[in-house]
Image 1 (cartoon, rainbow, N blue to C red):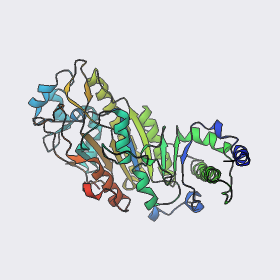
Image 2: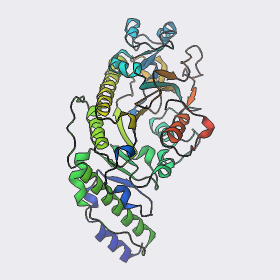
Image 3: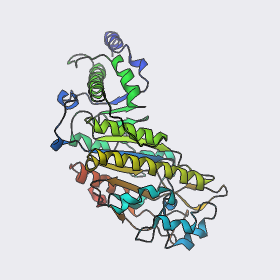
Image 4: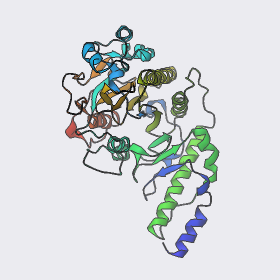
Length: 399
């Protein structure tokens, strides 16, 4: 940019430094304003939403779904970090597995066929670095590829225009990319208190590419902020949500869904799953928080007639090692489990193979049996109804 262009940009963005909690990813095209204008839609055209919950740190699949049928092999590898056998009767499944007893609040959703599990999820040549494996999961690449384009940025622009996603937290993750329009915020309340600091600027046709891009981004951010402000002017009062951090985040998501915010994906994070030491109590408490928050969220969506419009999907960057360590925890591993929940879920089922505890890899890890991109492909075709960029990995029939 030349000096004149820089001065124009500086004058156009006087409040940018006051908005540290806003992140916006957009392309240089001007999108249709009617998509983010906040207009109501009829009940016959209600918007569908995916709610992604990242279990950050690496969730231990073996203590989420415990191998009841192979309990002797399980106890061979774990003593301090194992779930007691008598506890497995609280939430047994029909495939020889049992759900962690601290998640029994979700049993009724399982029995109603609105919750399913996917086992053995991972990718070949699993990477045990938090950051690198998170990148792989969030870009749908292999262990030998690098990309800065999130997997949802390859799906959502096919599905709709306007605002594609809202992240309650930091970073764009699976929605990174210039064609995926995403807002990251700490909470809707914080966002709404700051959004008036962003003045509207009409897109320009002249000037440098960088200047046009930044001006267009600000214009789209202003439009998205206006929509959220209109939609969230009178948020519904929701009762019964758990008071955990995750519970409050899902309560905010529920308010936005019930206010018919025009977006396709919400992403939240539940952290603390890097359980290298004293795993049993820490992990059980995390799963208790997760189950309580999901139970409240499901009840709220069902009470307001929106349960069929919502699909909840959990994911984590990897699982944990089968063998416990000297600290009573487990180290970074490979394959893990995913939970899917919603009114349109083909639930009451476990998808994928049971973990083969008698056939570990050379590092003592479980073999991956379900490629995570098969899950993404299923969401692309069966939920969003768009082309599947990962068709070579098959699909999983949970929708």
